[in-house]
Amino acid sequence: MRSFLSAAAGLFALTSVLASTAQAADLPDLKGKEVVVATENAYPPLQFVDPKTGDAVGWEYDAMAEIAKRLNMTVSYENISWDAMIPAVSRGEYEAGMTGITIREDRAQQVDFSAPYMRSEMLMLVAADEDRFANARDFAADEDLLIGAQPGTTPFYVAVYDVLDGDEANPRIKLFETIGAAIQALRAGDVDMVLTDSTGGNGYVAAYPDTFKLVGEPLGTEDFGFIFPKGSNLVEPFDAAIASMKADGTLDALNKKWFVDYSFGQ
Image 1 (cartoon, rainbow, N blue to C red):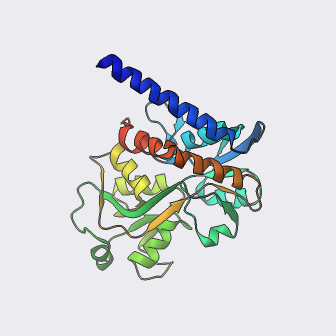
Image 2 (cartoon, rainbow, N blue to C red):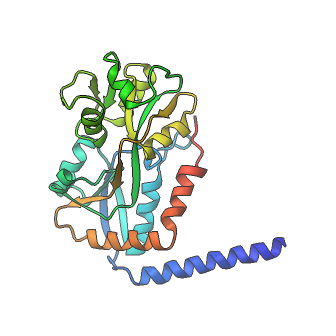
Image 3 (cartoon, rainbow, N blue to C red):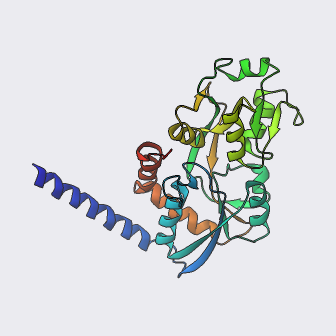
């Protein structure tokens, strides 16, 4: 039975490789083009510094490597803060950007988006021992409670318009340059909640189950995409590669690797 299963597994793997190769043959060939990608490395499990190895890793790194292979291109990375990323890509300083970027109309006026590679829901990340509130309504009712957020992000606008009173200057929202800084403020008790999509939220809970938890119902959904300068000729090839990765199960395999199987170091 073991040899039969091993042979079957080998045949399945070979079939998958052949299918992937056949699909790659139908994709655009970028002839070794070098693409410089801006990333933040602060959004587990999409992209972050592995605490066990010190290497920058994650779902987006694996996806980008697979896209590079399918399109015959090379990729290099530059670390940049979130608030600088969209303007820098818009100016053409980088060929692409990735950091779990929500596809939104206002951002699409500055950059072009790829087709969505993932859909996520907005959730409330809190301390593991939090018992003062369990949903957005109760949070909003307690004026002593504070939210940590990055300005200009989807969580910031959800905090303003879906949790609080629509005032973008509401003093209950404490602003941080990076999502990592907001998470550290939550850990230290300087804020009481950080809104994050389910992708990042589940990553933090998996990494630190004794420190964080998620509460409440989802506050909406969002689609993630890679970004490019307006008019970039990379959008169509990336879209084709993403479609092929959906079709052959590669995106599902990445989801399993990073959301189910990956073990965060402490």
